[in-house]
Image (cartoon, rainbow, N blue to C red):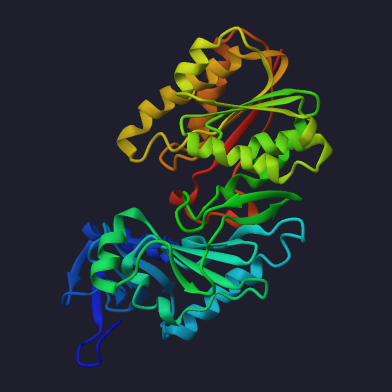
Length: 401
């Protein structure tokens, strides 16, 4: 925030950045800044001007990030303060109020840039909201922010790994800090389409669970009746449990992390009173996915889900990632029996959906088996993306003969 003794932080940017800001893109990169009247501090409001010295946009300044300004508002000038930010947070929360009924208490309440809150996401897990920050720019403001949901009694702060040191040393915040409510003494249990899942909002990946795959888990549930499921990169068994609830005969959860597999077993135990879940044979296997798929060539399944972590964390890794996606799809297709279904997912933002789908389709063609495409999917409504870099999740469903 700006000290009263300092002039407002003023920036001018390149013509390309100016055009992008007018079109609604939420980021200004450091190499796009042409002029700056003084040094700025994290969380200070930076005012962007165009080449004719007219107001262009205003946003959070972050001197430590390649994304130098995260735009909060563009167009006509507005006064940005805590009340303005809280109104925007409230609007994001309100948009989710009619998306879910009582059978789902785990969902995204605020989705960063796509809700006009660049660098901040908020996820609800029953009575807990986990707020994750991807820039230190929010930290000077965090004590005055309100995350409104009448069913929530606890707020947990999560910090992206790259800002944790600065957050501790300069702002005295730590990852997993309780901002409001009681301490977390046991896993938080929430509902997704009537199924109980546990999460660790203090230390778990993302904010504690992969909420973005909820719609795909429900789609797999509808496909699973009577089938044997192979869930590759299973994490805490979301697809496995959903398939069991859908009537799968068996579910194999494959992950390299025993910690994740233990969570999968606990999630099954949480739902043991559901007849279909109790009747499904759940097996957990700790192994490298690529190696296991090669070694278990003779074991066949009726349904295979591939949900790997991001295989391209930067643009330079995209081609290698596409090759890996193709190898995974080919190996999974070889494990499918007649009329088997493959669900292949990617969460790599640097791999665009058409590129990913092409890699999986190419693997299906090279398998020599006839196949039909069932559907492709993208972001769930609570994770809607409004700019290209925000579009990361995609999945393709196909049936092989």
